[in-house]
Amino acid sequence: MLPRTNWLARARKWCWSAAAQKNARSRSKNQKETGNTQVEFIAADLSTNAGVQETAHEFKKRHTRLDVLLNNAGAMFMSRQVSSDGVEMTIALNHLNYFHLTILLLDVLKASGQARIVSVSSDAHRGGKINFDDIQFKKGFSGFKAYSQSKLANVLFTYEMARKLEGTKVYRQCPPSGLRGYRFWQEQRWINKIRNGATQTHAAQGS
Image (cartoon, rainbow, N blue to C red; front, side, top):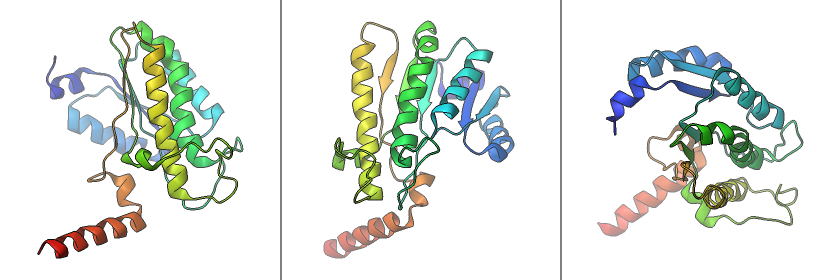
């Protein structure tokens, strides 16, 4: 196996970014960190069916090989929002885009030999429950419950993909994102207050 720095430098990296204006800065940062000049972006709205389809189409138009598909787009919404497709935004962005993009790129992954699908979840999935009666939380919306549900859906999807892809050379992983150093959680200020309060309480009890 190649050392991490070597394969990063040699691999062509594709990043799907929801913010086109950040592409140049992100590309430059990736090139500097890895020494890899073959870093490219596709700007896309991954919360919509059309956006995901356009992303897959654009990738296939340019490439016939995909070694690693890293599904990591996500957000937590403290008030209920819907995508342009009319789907609750948390499940649309955090899970349906994982599912849709993976299925659309599955033929390329299978043709690439030992490919890997990594769908980033969260430890929040442990408290999640799939609300089949109201999966879009049209009643009693809770940002954290919607987020936990979407992360549990990621895990269940990975198990199902593992079953369907058994016997192929496509590997599946569903790691938690973690909290430390992860900007998504740093931006959720109310969660940080709870986490810091719990840490301070624990420290006080231990002293």
